[in-house]
Structures are given as structure tokens and as C-alpha cells.
Image (cartoon, rainbow, N blue to C red; front, top):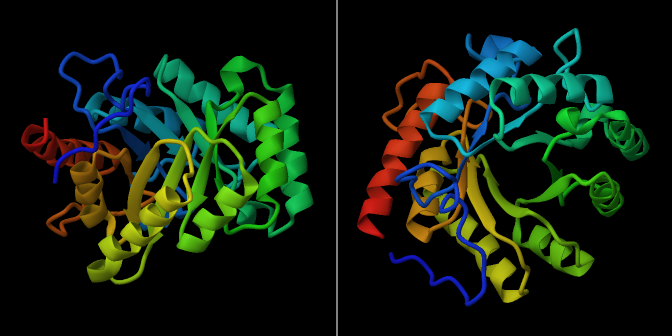
Length: 274
């Protein structure tokens, strides 16, 4: 499958301006921890120092950005300025210039949209080094439009998490600009993952939704969809948030190994589709 031509005047594809000599065209984000608990994998990063070390390893293996879920002192996911700022600052110190993003999953405030908005608005107290470059907002969760506006007022880029064709329709109806559209195929049978991804991507295109696409999966569909993203010339992601094993099913040491394996697979696709 060949890459779609870039429209006249459009910016370079993610990864083409990564600033690394010989950088692969496929832009790759490392999803460092997600909602997993430390017991899920011995290398799962939780503290700011652990996240910084994981980010450094991921960057060295070829990641173009990182996405993380900062935690409080008890290891619970948190949206508070104190915990977001500590994690973001630690990663920036370890990896200057690396784009850093966080989640805004509504489960972190037990489904309370008001509490989530209040927590995110609290990021205003963060100085530049402690404020994330971007944050993901799930279109399937209530309150996404208001949260979107709060993030933009803070100067934080928004990644729109779209799980289904209905999510694509909600994004189009809202008319909200985003830094990236995350086409996220969460679980389900691996054999239907590409078809499910195509349904979302086709609906986004049919509705004329602007913005670059990032395609990824979780658990069983992860590696299938990483390959599909490479074939389509789309950005993608990999990390312990998404999967705990390599494409051969063997357990991995951590995020660095996952990024290294992903970059090797994507390089094969890039070589076939210059």
C-alpha cells in the first residue's frame, strides 16, 4: 500500500521533521504506563523519576514523543497540578525538547466532569516546564467540549481520542481543532482490528475532520495496528500502556524494548514505501 500524497501546502508528515538524520517517516509516540498497576509489569514507571528514566530510554530507542499517566504519592492516577507538574518537569529535565503528553481520562476523577475541569484548570499554576505539550481527550466521555476549551486556554494541544465511527461524528459536530486525532482500537478480536480501524478512519475522512491521524491498538490488536499505521503512512504509538509483549508474543523488558521493536518493524515498512 502506497502512502497518500501530501496536499499542497500541508506540513510535513509526523516524523519527517523529527530532526534525526535518517529518521523514519513514521512518527512514533511511547505510551509509558497508562492505567496499569505496578504489579502488571516490573518495569512499569510510576514515579516522576521512573517516568523520566522510561522516557529517556524510549527516546533513545526512537520515540518522537511520550504519553503518560502521572500518579500521586499512593500510586493512583492524578490530574492535579502538583502531580502533573512533577512528572512533566522530570521528563523535560531528562529529555530536553521531547514532546510530553498526558491523559485526561474521566475515570481519574471517578466520573466527575466538574472535578476533572477543576483539576485541569489548576494547571494554570504550572510554569512552562511543568505544563504538558498536549493532552488526550476521549470523545466517548461526557464534558469533552468544555475540557477541550480549558486545555486550549492553557496553551495545551489536544489529542482527540476517537474509538468508534460515532466518536468521529461527535468530533465533526463539535468543530473542535486538534493537534492529532487518535484512532484508538481498544481490545476486541485481533482479526477485526483493521476493519474497525478502517471504519473510523473512513468516517473521519468522509466528514472532513482535519488534523493528522494516529492509529494504535491495545492488547491483542496492538502489533497488527502498528503495522497497519505504517502501511498507511500514519503516526502510531507503543508502550506498556498498550501491550506487555512483543510481536512474537514473548514478554518484553519494558518501554525501551517495545519502542525498539516497533521502530524496527516500521523501518521495514518505510523502506518498502519511500
